[in-house]
Length: 105
Image (tube, rainbow, N blue to C red; front, side):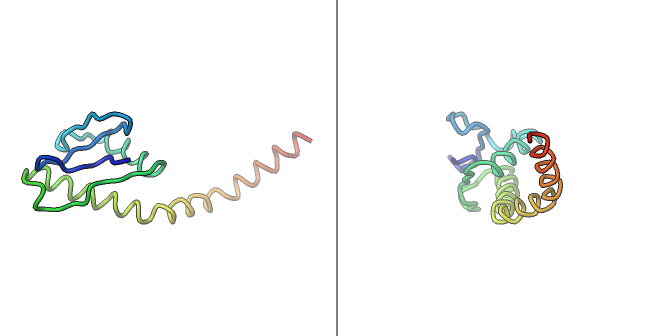
């Protein structure tokens, strides 16, 4: 699902992939960025490629370039991040899984 797009020389984003309601990128808030971050880590997350010549609005150009760069980096390292988190909590998960299994018996 596409969450960031370039249209009519401006950047747009949406939080809900099921709607066609797009918001101009210069209106993005910290909460919106966090919601997009959750989408990027849990769902299929697509963005239009950043192209300087397509974004004529200077504010949209700067914001899109930075957001696109950070999300591209996150998505390229998504598996590594997930593996790191799983490894970090593996011992706790194993411990409590064993305890729950023993309690059920």
